[in-house]
Length: 342
Image (cartoon, rainbow, N blue to C red):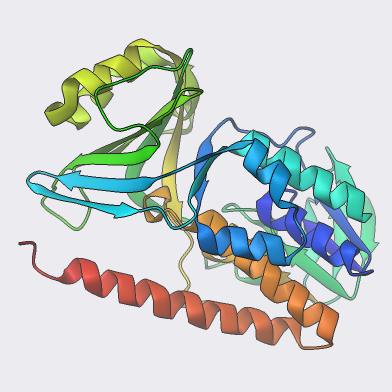
C-alpha cells in the first residue's frame, strides 16, 4: 500500500499509474477542489512520460493546444526554435484528465482531508486529532509548501526566486500582431542574472493567454491570488514596451489575473532519500515558472517511482538518482546562461 500526500499533477498521475499496475494507492488532498486557474506547457519529454505511465493520448490532446514554435526575444537578441511536442494546458483541464485516469485505474482519493502531521520514522499520518494511515511507504507530493518536507528536513524550505508572476486569460480569443500557435517571450534584460521583466503570450483561434514575470521584492500574502486586471495593468504594460500593442490587446480583453510569488525549493543540501517517507515533484525540488519544466520534472519523478515500485527496485534509490539527474541538468543549463551575451 502506498499513501500519497497531495493530489496535484505528481500525486494524481503516480496514484493512477501504481493502481494500473495493481499496486493499491491512496491520495489525500487538502483542498476539496484543488484547482488554481493557471496554465502551463508540457514538452515532448513530459508527454512521453505520461504515455509510459498509461495516461491516454486522446484526452490530453482534446484539452490542450499544440505549439508550433517557441520565440524568445530580449532587446536585440531573438531566437525561435520549433516545438518539440509542446502543448499548452489550462491546469484545471489537465487535472481533469489525470483525475479520470487515476479513478479509472482504481486509485483511491480523499479530497478535503488535510494531513496535518506525519511521523517520518513510522509513516504515520495524522489529520487533526485522527490517525488516518500508517503505511510502508508515504510519498510527499504536497507541493512547494510541503508538510512532508518540513517534517523530514525542517531546514530546507522554499525560497523566493526573485520574481512576481502574473497570469491572464482573455475573455474572448484575440488576434494580436504576432504568429499564432507560437509561445512568445518578450523581455527586458536586467542588471543581474534575472531579466528585469518578461511578457509571454500564446494565441490561436480558440484561446489567448498571457503571463508577465517581474523581478522585484517578494509580495505580501494579501497581494497574491486572484485580482482585477486593473491592479496590475500598468506594471504589465511596462514589462514589454517593445510590443506595447500586443500587451494592450491582451490586457484590454482580460478581467482578472492570478498573481504568485515564484519560489524554488533548493536541492543543494537535501538529505538522502529514505523510506518510509519520500518526496516527489515540487515538494522536493520546485523551480520558478521561469524554468518552464516543473511539471515535467514532477511527472518524471512519478515515472521513476512507478518503475521502482513495480520492478522490486528501491524507490529511495530511484529518487536519489532523480535528484542527481536534475542537478546535472540544471547545472548544464546554468552554464549556458553564464556565457557572455553577444
